[in-house]
Length: 150
Image (cartoon, rainbow, N blue to C red; front, side):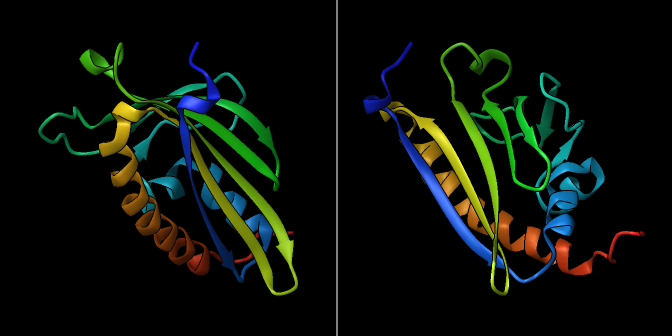
């Protein structure tokens, strides 16, 4: 077990001016997740193991191994975000947590990816750029959703 002091977190916040339920749908429905993040077999069930899949690149097989850790509807979602395959033993082992909080004009969406070790510096820098782009995609997908049926 590694000490918290030896790891760091990446936090990105963005206010999205759409209903919390729409944002939650985009965070928890696999088809919508694929539109702004990656292909997946996600289900919002604590303990569900799933993968995010992207095209392979040098030094990365394109697969992220995950497990759902927390599901608090419309408020908080958390899952592990780990290296896969041959890289799993010594590779990235982090946790992504989404927190939604209502504001006067929408919802504050907070994404925190925690557990980056000093040897994960390249992943940390890549995640910083990647999550900025992903959150812009999340906002675009949410804007395109119709209100849920009553």
